[in-house]
Length: 63
Image (cartoon, rainbow, N blue to C red; front, side):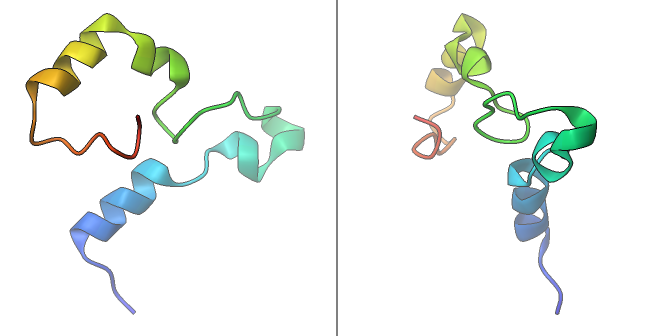
């Protein structure tokens, strides 16, 4: 089966990181929310302003 580009991007960004796949080699997961989004990143003022300015971004899944 094939997937479209939106599905591929979703899987790439929300997929597991190496720590959750191979914890013995890369260590325990650091508590990330997604592969590239951490709690510390969401607390950053610049990121918060970016999300608040762009009303087209769906932030419901990260709030």
